[in-house]
Length: 258
Image 1 (spheres, helix red, strand yellow):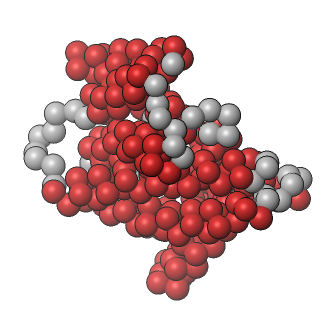
Image 2 (cartoon, one colour):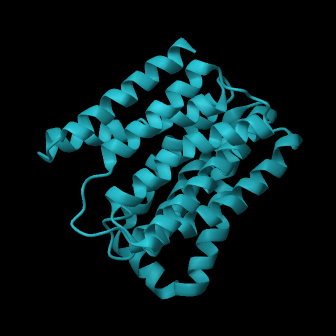
C-alpha cells in the first residue's frame, strides 16, 4: 500500500495514524503496562521516527523488490547480535543456523535480477533501516516483558507512536495530508489495522520465546508474499527463489529443533 501510493510520505502517515486510531479503544480493555516499561515505550516511539524516515526514503529511491528484502533480511541477524549484548540471550547452534537460513532465504526470495544497478542511496537507506528494525525489536521485546501484560504495552505503544509522526506531517504538509485522508478515508485505517496486527503478534511472542527466533520467524512473511505472487499475479518463481523458499522452510525447522 505504501510503495504503490503516489505520495509515500502521506500514505505512511495515514497508516501510522490509522494504527493509533485502531489501537486506542484497546486502552480501555487491557491493563496499563507496568511503570518499568514506560521508558521503553518512549524509546520505541523515538526509534520508530527514524524507521519511518528511512523507510520513506528507501521506497522513494529504490524498488520494493530491492529495499524490502534488504531491510527485512538483515534485521534478524542484527537482532540476534544485539540480543546477545542487551538481553544476554545467546542463541543455540540450531538457532543460529535457522536465523542464517531464513535471512539468506529472504534475500534469495525477494531479490530478483534488475534491469539496472541498484541505487547506492536506496541500499544505504535500506541497510540503515535493518539496523533500526533490530534496535526497536530489542527495545520492544524488553519493554513488553517488563510490562506485565504485553497487550497493554502494545496498545499504548501504537497510540503514542502515531502522535509525533502524524503531528510532524500535519505541520509540514497539512493541506495535502488532509486532502489525502479525506480522499482515502479507509486506506489509513485498513493499513493501520494490518500494520498493528502484524507487529502486535511478534511483540507478544517475544514475551514467550527468544527475541532473535521471533524476529527471524517474522520475516518468513516474504515466503508467503512470493507464493501469493506466483499464484495470484502469475509471477515466475526462478530456481533461486525456490532455493530461497527451501532455505526459509529449513530455517523454520532448525528454529523448532533449537
